[in-house]
Length: 303
Ligand code: SF4
Image (cartoon, rainbow, N blue to C red; front, side):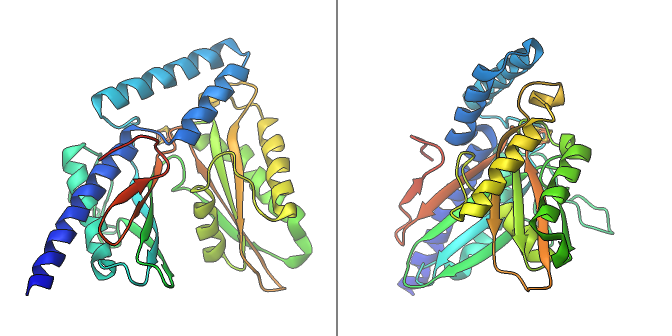
């Protein structure tokens, strides 16, 4: 009986903490993105681009002070979870994450972005059938849980694309696919962009990899030497388009290009591209089995 009471209390505690974390992610950009925007603004010599960066920083300052979302589109929530097999609330986590989105939607507040498909009904709760999206990995011999929380907006990473190339198209085909997308729909998201590229065996593995790529820090590099080389080549190529902040011209288009790759069938190369915008609202929180937490993306943040 006591164990059950304990579990209910722990569930309530984690829901409260996660709802506060979702709110934090909505109004405060992660440290790596803030740092990169500052760096890009200092390198920029286009006058209009400099003004736009200044406006972005003012926006960020006010969002933080007022604790209000830094962009009107608070997206749909996507969670990338790595859960230890011994984390005590593993069975309750789906419900905790859903409830935390609902709670944060009321308290922050967040825009109501979850519409039931075909019924075209918006319950106004930001949760729905299969929403928020939760992607799971289970870790052996661990009692912790790591949760990447991401606000995926309607202009940035929700309109991602994926395809499967024939093997003869090779990795040149991957580059062509990404550049074609960036030169046609890249501006759909507000630059400077974080471009996530996924490479795998099929559309769904490539698509998930491209989302995971957006969870990596803007300045990180793929551990595979060839994939890291592709990241650099794509970054240089997309920068050469000269989108600048908000797509109104400037010397840079991107904060970075991250590639995440997994093994493929010899006859296929799956590729996907997803773009994060300048207001790249993601955060990482880790809980131990007693629900002590650590936020690694927002230094000094407390819930
Ligand atoms: S692309 Fe990003 S900054 Fe632009 S409207 Fe969408 S969420 Fe906001």
